Image (cartoon, helix red, strand yellow):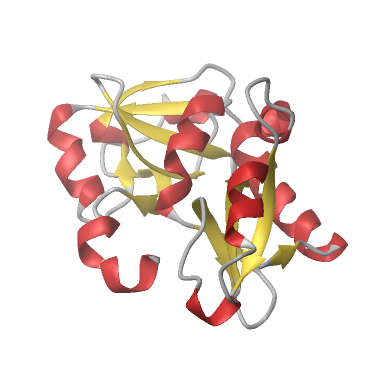
Length: 180
């Protein structure tokens, strides 16, 4: 477990900025306790500093996980967010998309959000912007990237893709062996 390098930190923060914008400040500068990002076996963890100090007493090969896993670095050096970061993304999300009840299951099975399943969308959402996908009862289901802006969605046909799925809560069941 070690701190992120400048390049790694830039990759993580640029990916997070796509979803939560300037609210990244709220992740690091918290009122209750200091939190930080740490790298362990190519995975980035968001952990409180008090928990991190306690974990120092555990040997690196014996340490499985610490804090909340935000994502992992691929072998090519790209950072990919995991579904385990959804709670923090949903809390600080700048742009949101709500899906109708008939669109929840297709999204949770790994499909993209189509126009027919759209319930609401945040006003002035730009194209290729990271969004958090919610059910109509305000339960976060996952996150993705918009295919069209809010203005363009009104002109689309019902089968057009509106949000490209990046991760959904169904991954806890489909990919449970690779998440942690």
